[in-house]
Length: 287
Ligand code: NDP
Image 1: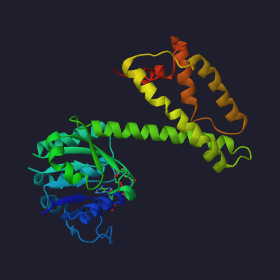
Image 2: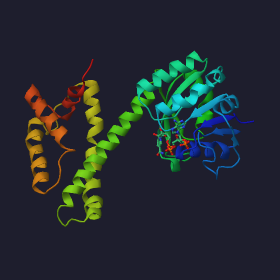
Image 3: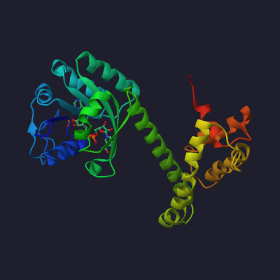
Image 4: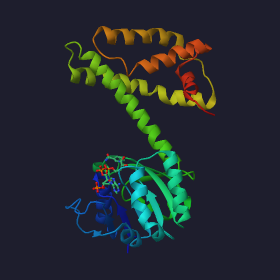
């Protein structure tokens, strides 16, 4: 028999997770705060209480709205967790993950924190992956079962590391979307076709610039190479034009202003002849 699995939370993501387990033949028990959620989900056992759901499986996944909802939902079932593995796939911070890991350890449970890098429709498909951190033994034991929903990738024993990686990836994503949003706002201030601009220019340009990111990472890790012809003094001087053109065109440059300030600060602090990698350490506020 395949490993029995419990899924706590039948929102869009929890439902997709439960569906994937059922489809793969895992006995699947589910619980949701509001009964009757996901009526189309068949083949599962619906538990009335969290405690009943937890006691049904040695592997318990929780996927709720946020950290507060996880604390609230799990507390009444605390005594049921001994000897089980709790996998928390709820979006949260490294601090949330470390606190929930401590709580799980106090209950005698193994703990894995997970960052889902997929939308519900991707669950069970080839492009989905989930970052895990926490108990390596639990990951070794349950990795094959967890691979049912998405490719599992272990990023370290510190339970906070999955959230750190997850939020870093989302930071990169939102930075990319911020840039695209600003670019489209600027071009839309004139009669420029958003689709033609995006397909013919923006995407090819961003794809070409993407090649600079591994170089940036190598420089951070191994030290400065020669600046590749794009020093920060030049970039800071040119960046002013991005801000001025936005204002001239009646477009709010708010998404760009912090980057302009960072470049200017880098130049003030003596990094004008270095390249973009030099601004990464400037963002650190501790350590
Ligand atoms: P939904 O809004 O669809 O569902 C939220 C779920 O949380 C519901 O089951 C809801 O129960 C439950 N919930 C909220 N508050 C509480 C509470 N106080 N106690 C118990 N249960 C509670 O969200 P998703 O399923 O889409 O997302 C779930 C998690 O997955 C989030 O942390 C999200 O960031 C993460 N995620 C989602 C992705 C997505 O694209 N959807 C992608 C990657 C990660 P009820 O039905 O009773 O309201």
